[in-house]
Amino acid sequence: NHALTRMTHDEDIVAEAEALAGVSVPTGSVNTVASASAETPKRNASHDSNPPPPLVSHPLNWRPNDGGHKPNDATRSVLNEVGGVAGILKFTTLFYENVFADPHLDTFIRDRTENHAERFAFWIAEKLGDAAYPWTADRSKRSVCPF
Image 1: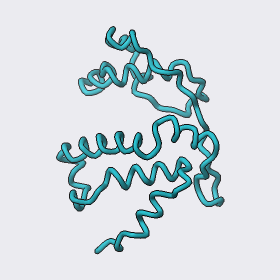
Image 2: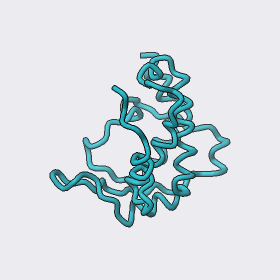
Image 3: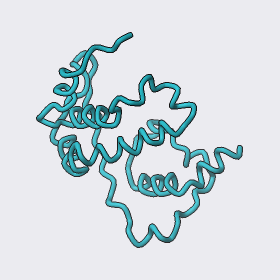
Image 4: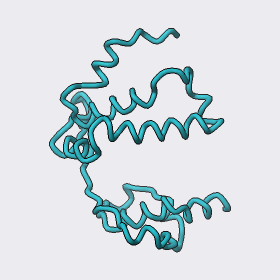
């Protein structure tokens, strides 16, 4: 399959697979593209001079019938590490730029003038434990969806 071959040789996917190689994950709990390939190619040598930091695993802090995810010290640490809302906003801005550029994904966006990146950043930050509750504060100022 040509698409699978392209994906398993994608530089970012290769780098992520190499970073994940050192993480202990229970068998069968993760389905990765790299596992579908018999051989994972080495990433571009330019990345080798600046290896990524070690990957740290934080278990999902969610229990059924307990109100969903609860932030904890680990999630607040992740929020701090990425630079808070501002750091997450960099990611969500790039994410939505790519969504809007994709003709298929863009069809799922009702109104491109809304500040999707900021809302998503606020939501993620709040789920990770931002004490200012940025998503809740922003949501309280928005009107109800018109449909």
